[in-house]
Image (cartoon, rainbow, N blue to C red; front, side, top):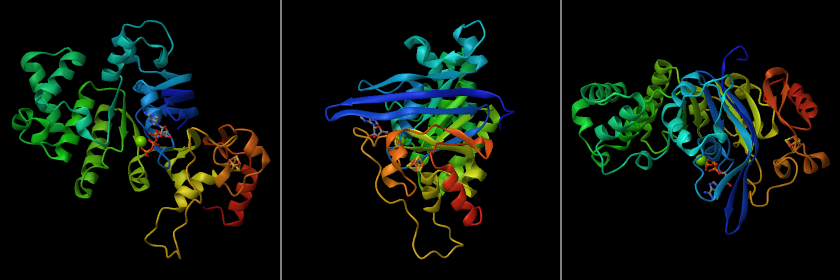
Length: 351
Ligand SMILES: Nc1ncnc2c1ncn2[C@@H]1O[C@H](COP(=O)(O)OP(=O)(O)OP(=O)(O)O)[C@@H](O)[C@H]1O
Ligand code: SF4
Ligand SMILES: [Mg+2]
């Protein structure tokens, strides 16, 4: 992937939530890159920081959250043009003024959440909500804007578009609402879409089609997608690369084939091994012992050490850094890669 163009670099993001119980150290130096046109999956157990990563980049953390450190470099020329920015270099998202950020969240990057009702306004029709985005970000009005709205409704396979245009969100099914959210997020043709568990709330029968549709539209609009999901089956079907997160850190990054076949971080190995394989007879499902730590009092050093079979003193004392292992594009953070690799060889090279 390294010959591809980079759309976004996220460097060393540190995010905190200030709560009555204490300070939640939600992200502790999250670092990854995103290429133009790719689907990057963020995976990991509940509470590992997937949603907070998206919200930190979009600067939607709410009153109690704050990103204390880090950089988000956005290399989208169209967004620069629309913001009226001249000069070389990327957009530094965390340094934008609130007004500029509001615009970027339309034409630069947008978000599809698990519950479409959180994105839709119940008192406006679907058509009115689409028109608002089209008028604001595409500068269209009147008949031209309406034609564009109907085209977007057709793009997400809702028919007849004229009827759907007039409906309020509560008059649509969950699947139809999620399709409308997808069409609204695509309306301004953003360079990047975050999809946070986009199909979890939908019936299994329509999940697959909504995912397929997102992939088709992503290709059509050449959008990059950051897909957040618990479902490794969905990841296997739809992503190009995978970022494994654990307790507020990115612990491994690789293309999906490498990550499923040869995960190297002990946590990723546990995560992949926990996926049931119907063609294999296993006495019991593998699992990762222990639980995700409380991020008000996270473990010292490598945050995975209380659950890791390879942990030694250095793991408890110092946080490892993401480094290439085996190939330039396979990044892992672990003090004991040599031992892990040796064990893998003994098992025949595959997890
Ligand atoms: N508004 C908030 N206030 C306090 N803590 C928060 C808030 N939002 C998230 N957190 C904490 O930040 C950490 C990361 O949460 P995040 O929502 O990113 O997890 P996640 O990986 O998306 O999990 P899930 O798979 O369950 O959605 C967790 O410890 C969570 O409790
Ligand atoms: S750094 Fe240590 S504790 Fe962390 S994953 Fe590697 S071996 Fe395990
Ligand atoms: Mg989440």
